[in-house]
Image 1 (cartoon, helix red, strand yellow):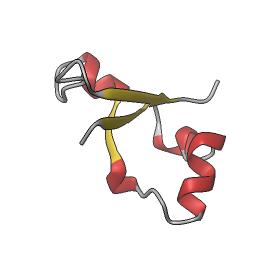
Image 2 (spheres, one colour):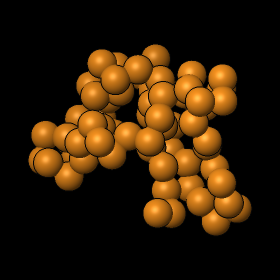
Image 3 (cartoon, one colour):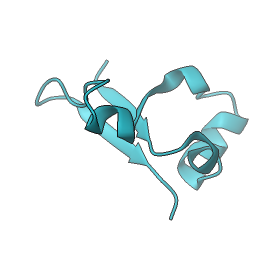
Image 4 (cartoon, helix red, strand yellow):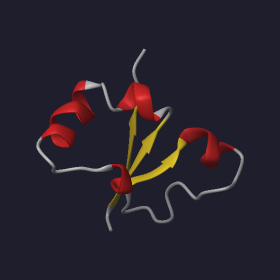
Length: 61
C-alpha cells in the first residue's frame, strides 16, 4: 500500500469533506483508516515506513 489514512478522531473525521463523500459512496470504510494520530505519537502504530509512502491526515478544526 502506498498511502495510509491517519485521523485525529473518528466522529470528527467522518464528517469532514475529505471523508464524508467517500464514506457515503462506499469507497472508504472504517477499516481503511490506518491509525489515529495519537496512536502514532505514542508509538502504538507506525506512520510512514518508507520514503515513497504517502500519509494523509484528516482532521476537522
